[in-house]
Each structure stands twice: as C-alpha cells, then as structure tokens.
Length: 431
Image (cartoon, rainbow, N blue to C red; front, side, top):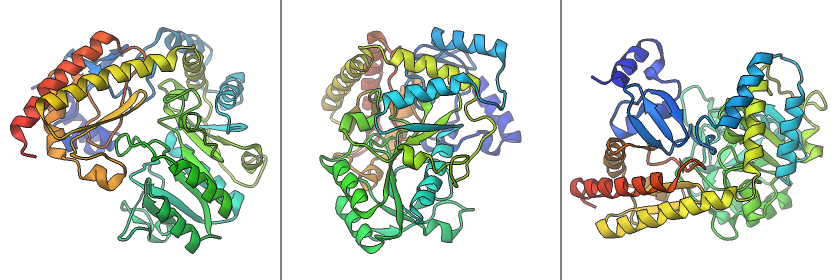
C-alpha cells in the first residue's frame, strides 16, 4: 500500500471524508488522493517521493512556480518579525496600492482571508450600497461556499435559485437568480421582471469552475450596459483570473470595468488571502467608513501580504504574460495534434495560462454544454496522466494552470503523456 493510501485512511478517522476541501477527495476520478510532501518549481512530490509535473498549482496561486526564492526569502524575513499582530501594518497598504495601480476599476481594496470571504463580503456591500436584495449569478460559476451563492438552477431559462446544499435556507436561496453563462437574452428577461430588486450580477468573466469557458463576443459589454441601465452593480469574480490572464485580470483583456472585483489566489502568493475592491464611493460604504460591516482578525496578515507583494513585483516584469502565452500555445498545439491523431472526442479550451481538456464533441460555451462532457473518459485520462507523472485537477470541470516555472521540457513531457492517455481513453471508451 502506498503512503498516500495509508495517510488517507488515517485522515478519514479525524477529518470528514479525509480532506479539508471536497475537491481534493478524487471521488470524480475513482481514486484516492495523493498526499503531497513538498514542491519546487513546476514539480510536486508525493508521500512516496514520486515526482509529478503540476498543473494544479494549489488551484491557481502558484503562477511563479512552487517555492519561488523571492517569496520564500520574504516569508523567512517576516517570520522573524512576527506572523500576525491584529493591527495595521505598512505591508497592507503596499499590497493594496499595488492592486489599485494594477486594476483600473479599483480605487480602494479590502483584504480578507479567502476568495469565499471576498465574494460574500462583496455581495453584502452590493446589497448595502443599492438597498436591494436579489443577486444574479451564472449557472456553473462558483464563488465559494457562501449561502447566497451555493445555489442551483431550477427548470427554465431564468429561475430563482434553489438550495444547492443542505444547510442553505430556501428563502435565502430564492434571493439568488440563476441564468446561463453567455446568455444575454436570459439576463434581459430577468432585469425586466426584477428591475428594482437586483443589487448585483456576479460572474467569473472567464470561468474556471466549470472548466475554462470564455465569454462570447459582446457578452460582457452587454452585461455591463444592462447593469448600468437598471442601476445594479457588476461584480467580476477574478479570484482565479486576477493577475493571471493579465496583470489587470480578465477585465484588462476585455476592456470592461466592473463596479466591484473579488481577488484571491495570486495576490497572496500561495498563502490564504482574498480581497474585494472597487470604486471609492462604493467601497466607502464599508465599516468603519460606512454602514456595511465586515471584519477579520487575520485579514491583511503580514505573511500573506509579503508573499503577495513579492509575487506581484515579479509579475510586473515586461515579458511575464507573453512567456505564459507562449507556453500555453505550445501545450495547446501539441494536444490538438494528439486529439486529431488519436481521433478522440475532445475539445481543448485555453486562454493564456488557464486551460481545460473537455471530453466533448462540440465547443463548450456554458454549464449545460460542459456537463455533456464524458466524465468516464476524463477519469480514465486523469489516472493515466497521473501514472505518467502529470498531476491535474481531479475533475473534468476545473481549470488547469501553467506557471512561469514550466519549461519547454515539462511541456513536451506533458504532450507525450497526453498522447498515451488519449490512446487509453480511445481503447476503453466508445464515443
């Protein structure tokens, strides 16, 4: 028995399901999770010492690669000074200033401890600022496990949300309206029906939580115009995409300015962090300046701030995003050749350093088309890639991440493993 299996068996005695986040459980791929001992650059190493090329990157923040010397050195220096004070530090202002300078829609930013906390807080702020209660979210977009957002769509094109988890009150879920991503006509219908009740629309401008799905031409522009017309706020969840797709996030790529933006992952350099920011007149509604209360003892903790500052400094270097795009294109070209050669039903979706391989015969544009992907094929593919030393997110419906530390050799090794894995899928699955 591997050490990971032994550790998982032990963990299940003390931790629900043996994991502290369901995504780590490997249930969707009919396997047990690997327990990781260490990481360096683009590689991670499991409890048995086996090496894997990593495309999870701690679910996105490791854009520099694991254990980057500048981040490690900064953390070591800060640890000697202290890890948390529960009081303001200059580091918080420094990182906030960097976020404001990098994202044109943000005048002020409030640091929190996770992406979930950021989105929960942004919604409270939107409701407090507008005096309205209803939220529109897109089917398949995940914004953390807050009650207002952990909802599923009912039947029909536009629908009030139903509770997507035990413990979410039905009345609260009904304050969230769920529509399909990339469907502007559905949004128009909702706004006509609930025009004076909608506080905000929240979405991932480029999705990562149903796999990588990009917005149709004109979709984000139409959404921006609708929210302005009806006096609702537009919230971009850039927890994954912020400082990854571009220094200014997806909103820089698409030239759209939301009213509020949520951040996470990268701005903490791999440490627990989140943030939400926007225009001054909205952000000044937050306590102690305004009536919307939100607080956190560990918010802006020095370790996360140092890691974030050192990460963003390195990302500002001129060729960062060209470098990531070059690697992404190299990987895409190789995998597309493999798909054609093996003749398997698969679609490679990528933007910059985020990608997903969908086992689907047609383009994925929303949650329903994503759900039509062949999850059995993905499970076979995932386990064969793992056997070949490639560590991927253990779900068909997740983004994969390329880091600056992935070299051409690692990309080529991944392409070769992909070919073997696609052959295995072809052998076992009848499309």
